[in-house]
Image (cartoon, rainbow, N blue to C red; front, side):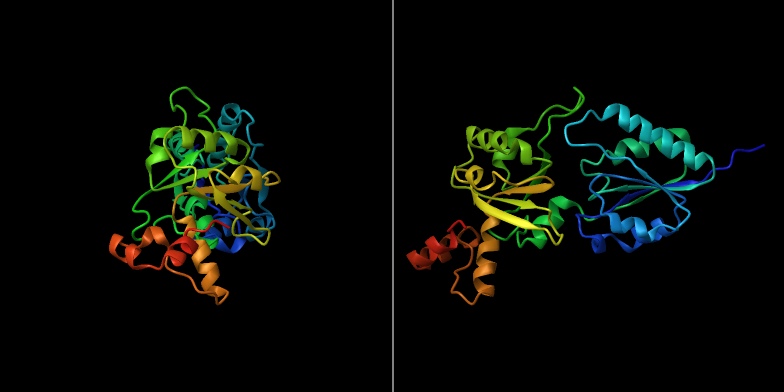
Length: 280
């Protein structure tokens, strides 16, 4: 008797708000017999799955060992699919941005299980964007890099490359609230100016969103009560948010100083240049 084979979906749940999941992600959930969901997926997303679908929590607390848990998830995906079920692996953000989606894809491929990847809006772009911070901005940032603030769990991956983090125009850190003091000290030690703008976006894209801005020199004093999940953005692009807020409030605002050409920057009134770089 041949083995019945179902299918696995690796689905990105998006950056937080339940209506930011993709249409294809919703369709996958509607077909699900089993949903393996992570800690950062919004509970409302599970309502897209049929009433009969088995809903299994597959997350872990920040800092908790993950290798054994990950192997269990691989086994569950394979077991359910081989039993003929449609199993959805629902992960916050995008499965392939520090979500270990690549490992799950490899495990499914090795086991011969059919699967489909459904990308999600990654928190590294979506959260800053909703908060009014573009990760790239003409004249201010032509590149960005995304880091996890946790040291790699296995020796083959290695820790954060702080040289790159200090030099890239925009550095985005995920899972970094508890290590914010380390992030600040490492960036400054590797050459980032203490007056570099930084934003910490707590509960991004949700009704509970809270944005704290400052500089590398001031942010620690302003974020003592911030709790995860939060996304950290470092770079001149943070100043765009303040300019947008001033314009929305009907206040005069010069374009972001870092985004001006050298000629435009020289022409700007001194007071406007200072205001454009003012840190909230």
